[in-house]
Image 1 (cartoon, rainbow, N blue to C red):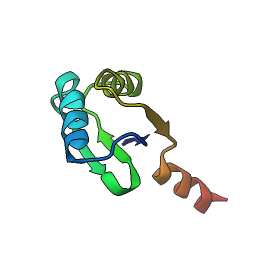
Image 2 (cartoon, rainbow, N blue to C red):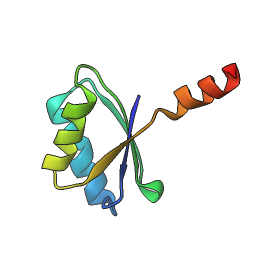
Image 3 (cartoon, rainbow, N blue to C red):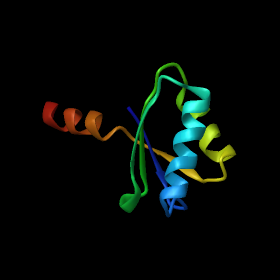
Length: 79
């Protein structure tokens, strides 16, 4: 799972545009978007994080990749 924060995603149109952009480069990708928190989670099929970031940028948005929250929680449990 790759997570991006997209602060300039503000409406349903933005959600659709980002989903379309991601799936255009990776049709197998599963996209989950939380508009209120400006969070975009992508479970990619074949695309790399850099390719996904670029696709979102090409759609006109400014994504910032966030560290994997699930991995961070697992690391905390091991300590």
